[in-house]
Length: 403
Image (cartoon, rainbow, N blue to C red):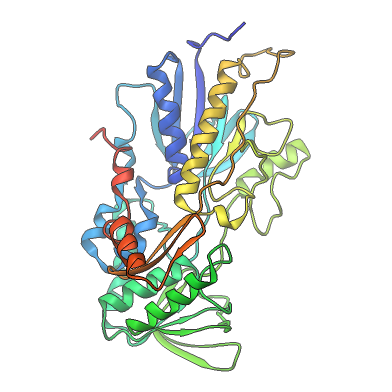
């Protein structure tokens, strides 16, 4: 016997970036499809969604930076039961309540989706709680770049390559140096030829690329970037003097909010306290038999680093939403429900292998289904037309239609 779909159901999605926005939007749509009692609450510590994928261009273009911010106030239909809460997740109190800053009472959930993401390499994750505060972060760095001679970018992953490329292409006299600890640019899931092509194209626009070199960064160095002259030393003994330093290395996940729940359950829900990554099952449920109604999607998961891309996070959000619907249909949230057959949930599988890396507005490298598009005109055309023009922000605007 199927459960009553008209019952009141509370779903909380924490984090409004790629995974969280996809989850919340898909679940909110169910209220128009026979689930009138469903209420989705989206929680985020900023008033605006920030299109982090577009940061390299936003860094050098004030006009484009403005376009990268979309208001969460326009995310849900104002006449619906769904709502946006501006605040930070302080702690998951128990298996049905969370504490959010600025809220006088704990928020109740039948289903919870943790999509808090991670602090990606470089300054692409702005921290300001409002659009104006976040824009000020970007503007401060941009103003520093306008007069900087030279600029140091540390880390040769996709973010480092894109940031170095846009700075060099925009500020012809910036004297950009990109230092990378590996023997080639870009991650191992990229074909080697793509990394080599990225190096060649960066050098063609004046970027000095140094490989097999690790730069020692002071402990008090601000995360992501710094404006002001500083000399840093590499593992070879070489000194790198720069007026602006940008760190495009490392990945942090802030998940201390799970500590109270871990203590209560007597379980370790995170891989370890240092990395912060949250253990998940293939269904994207948190890895605990006691929490089948709690999901994790996006960069905060313990999935491999090769999955830490915006479009993959969005796909995970769709999987999490679909599985929550299956649990709702089975009545898993109904008090006293037990003994029935567990619904068959879908496992998330990383099937898509596609990467576009712009190097300034007209150059770039790409990889499609293991097919490299590196030192070719085709690679430049594909990347400049598919991504570099507006970094696909048009795909996000449909989420924010209630102005």
